[in-house]
Image (cartoon, rainbow over all chains, first blue to last red; front, side, top):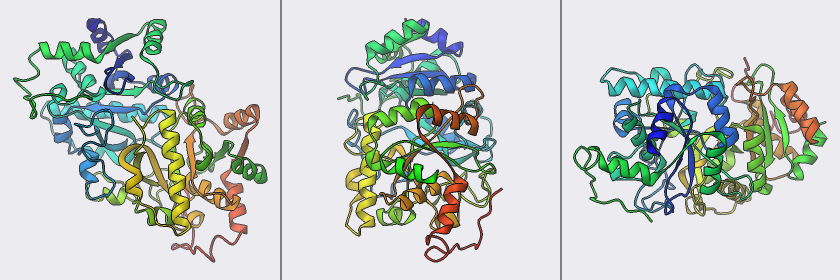
Length: 238
Length: 238
């Protein structure tokens, strides 16, 4: 099953990524950022409906000078504190800044968001290769595409769609920049149920993968513990 | 025509608000924030497709302690500068912070966004009445609902959907907090054309209003010049 998801991800197809029954209980559309098109953005907003965000690895963000939003906003009285996130009180949210590529017009159209997203993957690839990249020359903030930064110790530290999708990208051997969007339910007003998301995947011929499968595969690889020791020793999920 | 829009806005119906042919050339769904429901958020994401944002007046933001994002991010190298916005180089974007009401779960579902939006209208109403309101006790940042702050001198200073919608709310006599979302075109990848937006309005029995009509009415009232002298004397639109 996870091999199907890897194959789909490598081919630039949409993958449906569910997190965990004891976390958000949410399925996200997930697609590699470097192959995204305006048609994909259109599909995400029409068939998923959540916030279209781009997840990148911690190291790439660090090299690009992209901070966590909570760090930039640390002097705001209402800034998120540890414990504020109801589904994951041991961690913070992944939000970095909201950006537009400088060549966009409003920044919100399908074409503009696709441009920003593909440019983000170029930025990530460049700095991970050790190349010099001037983020400010290509992007400005505030904008319409939220960037999400994966936890430094990835799935050893946090089990969000941000970490799951970056881990999948790394294990698939593609540029670790994945664009995701939550599937919402038109009827209930809540997130789309796992059953309905699986039904959508079947009817559209898309891969559906659960966080537990990604985590299991990730724990069996050399990624955790050796390269990325968790600072806490264990992940706490509610 | 503008009376129809006022009536619709007062009744909590969706109004279609086009800006100007020489600006974004974009039509936004616009609805009063205090009457928004999860069904309205669902309609906005399905039939408009852009970023669902809440516009509030400058004075309300000031009293709530909500800054412009560009001010919070002023030390970031890539922060937006005057001239960066291609459709309005004489002004900056309206982005304030992205917030979630503290009683939300993920913050992105239709129910969660409706809760955040209606709570924002309570916050705006409270401070504009002169009441004490602790924003940090009700909201946290970063979150999933972008707040937009109208220019201090409203339509004397800037002609965005933020100012147009807040001006409409003020002239309609309702709480000046309007939630807006850009209408996007599935086919072209650009914003929905004015003609298609007008067609949608007709087929769905909704009011369609142009920025020029709002501006004309606003200039004929006592709002501009006397109460809100523009610091520049004139508005520059490309």
